[in-house]
Every structure is written in C-alpha cells, then in structure tokens.
Length: 191
Image (cartoon, rainbow, N blue to C red):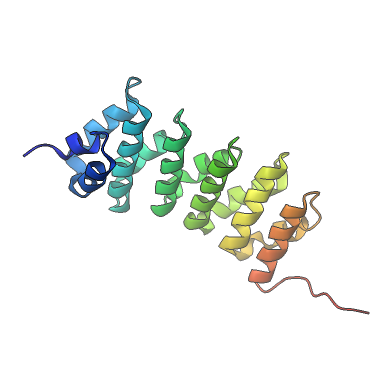
C-alpha cells in the first residue's frame, strides 16, 4: 500500500485532500522534513501544514510545536494555513506569534491571526490589551480591538473604555461594540 504522503505531495488537490484522513503521528518526521527543507516548494509546505492541523486537532503536541515553528514561513499562503490551524486548535501556546502577526503587511493575514486569537479566547486578552494600548500602528490596534470585542472578556473593559478615545474611528467602533457585547456600553440620550 503506498504511503499517504505520496498522495499528499502529488500536486493533485483531490488526492491530497483524501490523503489527510490517512496521515498519522508516524508521518510527523516526514512532515517536519518538508517544512524544514529549503528546497520544498510552498505547495508541499502548505499540505504539510494541513496535515499537521489535523494532528494538532487530535491534541498531538509535536504537530502543534511544528505549526508554531512555521508561523514565520516565507510564503503567505503557508502562514495563512498555519494561523487558521492554530486558531482551530485553540492553541494557547500560539498567542505570542499570533500577536506578532497582527502587524502582517497583508490585511488578510493579519485578519486570520486576529481570528485565531478570537478562537483562543481569554488567554489572548492580556496580549491583545497591550497591543491595543501600546501599538503605534492603527491597523494593529484595530485588530486588537476587534478581537477583544468578539472575545468579550470582562478583563478588557478598562482598555476598551480607554480605546473609545483612540484616534482611529475603527478602534473606537470595535471598543464600543465590545463594551455593548459585555453590557457596559455607553448610554446615549437626548437632553
């Protein structure tokens, strides 16, 4: 019987997708080799990440560790798959690299990192608060405010109140949205 890795790296997306169901922990050394070999093409690294994502969902710590080391891959599509996988795995260990990824040049990648932090939830709140309060880039503050709004952890309330005065209208919007979600939004009335 041929190895599922043959199909995973065949270049045929249908075969690779079918092979994911047959990848197990015994394939970790081969997946790691593809990730660490500079000659491996981005498509092969992407499929390695997809396979590792499946294993990470099964709480495999080695797969999770390999995903964490791939957060800085040179290819944006590979990083996108990594961010998605880390969010789906709700990997608390991924908070730091995902916070770093909020400053990705690509808005798409920054959004995926933000979504992953939202999936992780409350463990990401302290870092998101620091990003909201201290980052000089408005786009990073917007992503942090959005994540805090959607996580809706009460620990973020003071930072979100402060963010209502941010120079960015989008930061203000997400701060207001988050406070509303937690039931502490501002009450507007006509005098």
